[in-house]
Image 1 (cartoon, rainbow, N blue to C red):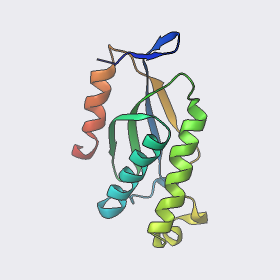
Image 2 (cartoon, rainbow, N blue to C red):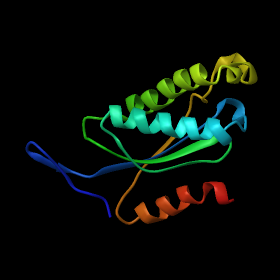
Image 3 (cartoon, rainbow, N blue to C red):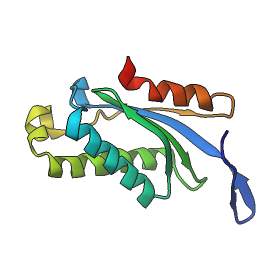
Image 4 (cartoon, helix red, strand yellow):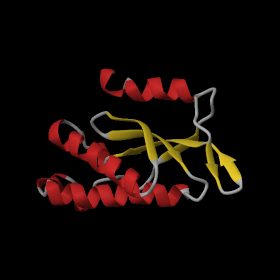
Length: 133
């Protein structure tokens, strides 16, 4: 069940399911690259006061279930996750730039959906099952 958070004069519970793909759906998210991107996303979330509830990848895309504040704007959150992770992953794995056309890690589009108490467990299970397919 979603956690209620308390701000100065307001109460909130805001969760989103985010999904985005590697550019041209290249299947690069495995092994050390997969571990590194997850570590980077966790750090980015922490730096931006966002909680990652669930996270999993499946070769060419990432799923996140996040809990954030009313001050967070989704396009900015996604830009932080995708932009910072791409830059830092390319620094750590420079060979990726040659494997990906134009040197872009992520596709420019993404999926976002709000999560309610009624759908949270379904989304958690779906994200956890990504590598098991």
